[in-house]
Image 1 (cartoon, rainbow, N blue to C red):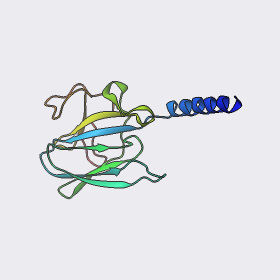
Image 2: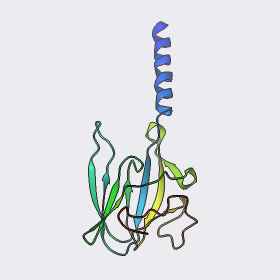
Image 3: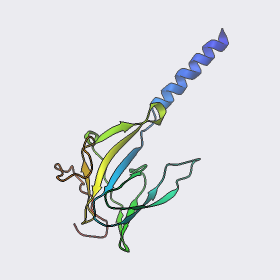
Image 4: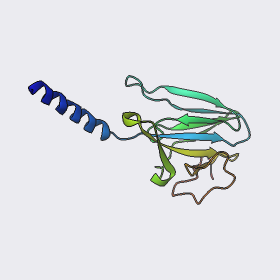
Length: 148
C-alpha cells in the first residue's frame, strides 16, 4: 500500500514539474527575400549543449528556428551578414502551440523581406504573406548594424 502511495505521489510531482516548465518559443521563418540566404542560429539543446546550425534557405522555403528568445540569429545574404541581436518578445496572440504534453512549445511565423526586415504574420496565415498586419512594438525586426 505504501509503495502505491509513493508511486502516485511521484507521478503527480513529475506531472506538476513538467507542466510548470517554461515553454520555449520557436519561429517558422519564410524566405521572401527573393534570393538564397543562409540562416545561422542555435538548434534544440541536446544533453545540455546548444548546437549551432546553418541552413541554406532558398526563396519560398521555410526553416524552424528553435529557442528564438534565447539566442541571437544572423542571416547571410550575398556575403553580407545581417545580425538580429535585439529581438523582442513575440506577443502571445501571434503564437500557437505545437507538440504534445511535455514536448509542447510555442511557435510563431515570420517572413524575411528583400529589405531584410523580419515581419510577424498571424499564426493561422499561410506563406507568403502579401500584406502584413500592424506590427507590435519591436517589429518588424531590423538587422542590428543597419538602419531601417
